[in-house]
Image 1 (cartoon, helix red, strand yellow):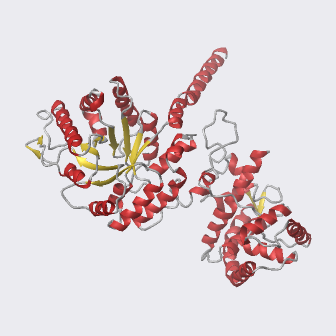
Image 2: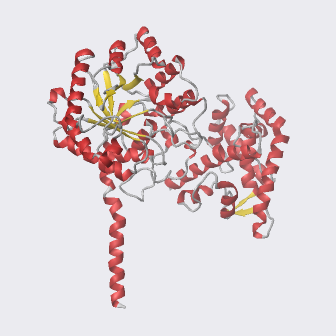
Image 3: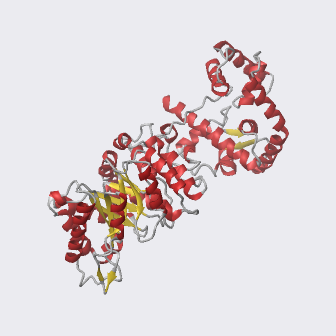
Length: 573
């Protein structure tokens, strides 16, 4: 027995050591991300081209350009130049004719464009010549270290580096002595898996150039096939080699394609492991399944407490830009469950309390995405509302009017109590519901109030029919306990109605949020408590066409915000 006890103590000690390792080790990574002055090379003009259902036009390029500029990105790609004339070149001609500032513009160009008998040739160099033609001074040279047409025994890394050095000299002689130059390892992951020495030789060559000859930095990409652990160690290896050779200020920019759902996590892992920035579009649209975009990356840094990027970029506009560029590219809004900029992203209740990294894990605090993007919390009128709140709600929904005073708010509060004593369970949070209450309390309806009531009255039969359809589903769950009493316990209500919107029933913030529905605090949801929000949704959104749409409006714009308010109230206690 004593031996068993000793083993248990030892096992517990080992378990706690392993569990707490997560707390110790990631702090370095989180600190890195929190303090990272991330370099963003925007690729919205080019990356989205390969994702577009519709061919880009000069007009669509101009629209994307405008969104990119609003985000405050200083550096950006304008085109990938080849022997073909692309739409981006026509757009460039327009920018030049309108004397737009192109001082931050980059062009893509192949390091070599022709291979003869296994050897890359110095001519032609169409991409670079077009950069010269359009006055694009900054270049990303792209190359491969495992291209099947190249004989890397004959064209070894020493010859490749000499080839690269000659290109640098050409760029500085023909574009600008101040040209910002990046080289992109296009097959970075495959080479490190199979021929890692090649990567080392090129990195070492670049890092040991004389300081006055060094380029801006290294770019690399992964097609989404590698896991985070691989990208972590490969990024660290490159960064450490750069630093060992004294190239601490060299940029290391990552670009992660999506394939298996790991894109954004891998992107952050690379940034925490030594990458200094990203080259990406503001939204995820791109080749195949897309890529880790700058909007998602920057917002993740911000939620971890990074203030540096907020000073460098217009981060509050990122969400709108991502939505707009997606629509320009695809003709549709982003998928509604897309993190950060999907329609459902601001509904978030889960993670609301503990979503920011805090030194004290018990602290009730967090990054609220809706608040960050300026989506203000609305005053919500329940039977607990006071006169001041009712007055605020009048101004919120109907603007300014001499009648909207504290005295009127108090009169409306008294009317709520009268209605309750008479057994009239009314809804007051919608425009129509509040206008009816205002009228009952002796107010003179404004034109806006009259319109709200009339519209609600006209739609009432149809909305009642939709509510009846929801009631049929309710009755199925009501009968589950053998008693049809219009009462459903929390767990049944979650299974029947909430599950599409919340992934975790027993999470702390969900349980707190459910209190917003339990108006009489008896631990059950009764039909009236739920119907309150359905009536509100029908009045507030009279054009809903189905019972499912009615439920969706009730949850997303009524219940979820009310739950968020409940959590805030709990946090303040």
